[in-house]
Amino acid sequence: MGKLILCCGKTAAKPYEFRRTGIRIYSVEELCYYITQNLETVADEIFAEDLADFMEEELGLSERAERFRELLHRQSGLKDVVVCILCSADYYTEAEIKAILAQIDEMNALTPIQRRKRRADNYLKCGNVKEAAGEYDRILRSKESAGLSGKDYGDVLHNLAVITMRNDRFIQAAYYFREAYERNQNRDSLKCYLYALALEGDKEKCMQEAKFYGMEDSAITELFLELERLSGEAETTSGWYDLESVRKMKEEGNPDYQNAFHILLDWMKEEYRTSGRTAGR
Image (cartoon, rainbow, N blue to C red; front, side, top):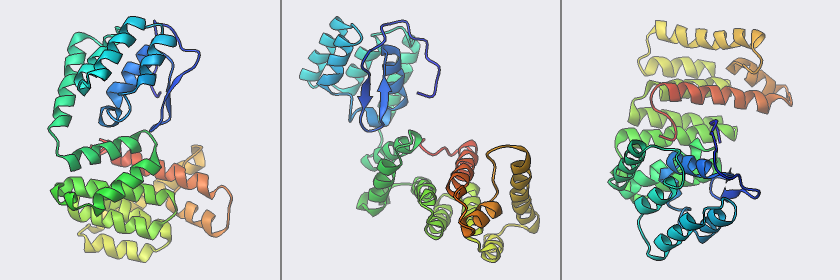
């Protein structure tokens, strides 16, 4: 699940799988962690009788499972159900549980379109690219998208561009990155736009666009030096590729192209995350 979790309770012989993310749960501690890390989407999955059955039959939590069923039958809210499950283990302190409930209150205060964006972001964070792409596309096509701030709308476009790059549609991705920057004014969206142009092999347009968007010569030089740096690291560090080498691999029909491209794309995503505008936030 991406984190080392100390489990003190019973370990399930048959795990419970959350269908939307494909994550499998083997313990009550993992269940608690999953819920808190997926608050945006868990409401679509947590109200399930088979989860109560899993708690009873696989985790040996008969009394807690019965309490869970009562809440389901009463159609209780998300906060009540979350508290019921989190109190099944000592994984979180009382103060931490209160903070989690405050997150739910914050989430409930969002507009429907804002909640849809956060749901899509969470899909992307969990690696459920198909679900994320579909949700982002529906958001952009909806009339309610007018209710998003310029930053949020731009971030939707940026994340959709990242997904589009995975499908080797560099021109379309470049378009999304450019439109993202026009709205969110995030320089990382602009950098990704220029990277996409370079990856497509249009270095001249990359230079032109950099100047059009006001990048000083020193910044443009730094941009291409960064690409050269990646190329240098490729010689000493396994798994690093620069844009030029990936482009050449594609032109030459090198079968390793796809792997190299996705490594580069992961780097681009990490650069974006560390800028403070995390995909999936």
